[in-house]
Amino acid sequence: MSLTAFNQLQDVVVVGAGVIGLSAALSIQQRLPKSSIVSVVASEFPCPSPIQGHNTAETASADYASMWAGAHYRPIPYMPQSAYAEQNLSQHQQKFHDQLAQEKQLAVRTAKIMKDIAQQFPESGIQIVPAEEYLETPPQENLLLKTGDVYASGDDCFRVLDRTELTALNHKTASRHEDEIKWACSYETYVVNVHVYCGWLLHRFLSNGGKTITRNLGSLADAFTLGIAKNGSQTPLLVNCSGRNFDTDPATKIIRGQTVLVRNQYNKTITRQCADGTWSFLIPRPLNGGTIVGGTKEIGDDETHARPETRNKLLENATHYFPDFVKDMKDFDIVTDNVGRRPWREGGLRIVVEKPEDGRTVVHGYGAGGRGYELSWGAAEKICDLVLKCLQGEDEVMVKL
Image 1: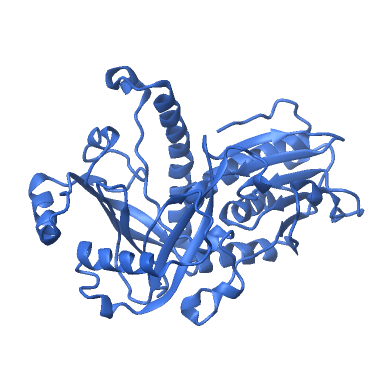
Image 2: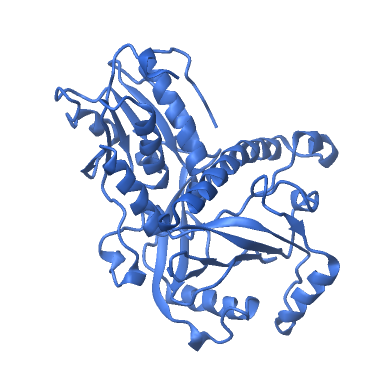
């Protein structure tokens, strides 16, 4: 889109400084004329990692979920439409898989950009690493996958482990007599040192002329009256990356996640999904950022403090399932507990234009849940496309996910 196509240049305000908000702000900034001003308003901004001796608990709340993420890219397989009839899926199941198919496009696009960043800017806190997944009760969509399929991205070296390899894996944890691994795979993915990466995004945004405003907004409407446009007037266009949309969307919910950051450094990311629905995983953080040991997914749980019994269970499971990492609980060098309240939305990430009144325009981009990093760049590009269309005065700019 040519920059000369704009009839009137307008400034843009992005609400929210999570990974999607920062990615969207940077994308918009890069595609608008230099004379435009893109601002990010948020109650919290990226802070240093606690592994550097910084007390994150004083500066990042549990609601600033991007500071408490793992983070890694673990794809979620979906059932293609061609298999709906054969598998006798319900309408609800079909809708869910349609959502996953749309998110897959965003995730694959994000993976490409993340890998490019890792190669061009190693200081960004992104690293390409091997990944493994172990499933005790694999869903049908996983069983449909075969070696060589596109899983995480087009060049991810995806491979389904054979029976001999499964037997060897199960032999490692046979002492607890739990359900055996029924399906496993290996592939290439990326991991993120979240504090370094979000700080890197913010630094690039500010270096390119972006503005930040630290403000605890009571509602999205409050952002219209900040008076930060060039002439001091009300902001005509907002980008809503607030995560939960100020709890005004009934489809939004909280998923509480608790993990442990340890100083011990691992060399790959690995996930085990147990038959009882619990998870155990390791996510190394680049640039000597330690390793995340996780984790929980507790829908509707509002507790913001770490539960000691949960920490002990996570560390105990890690020593059992991944003995090549740490064999004994006493060998963990614990840095901190992480508790994040992820802004999950039933129906998935919402990217849509809303024009409530008085010529105001809102481009929504919220509700990614625990997949903020995985969907960030794909979502940011779609959000940016809508912003540019709005600024051009196009009437039909609705995009829904």
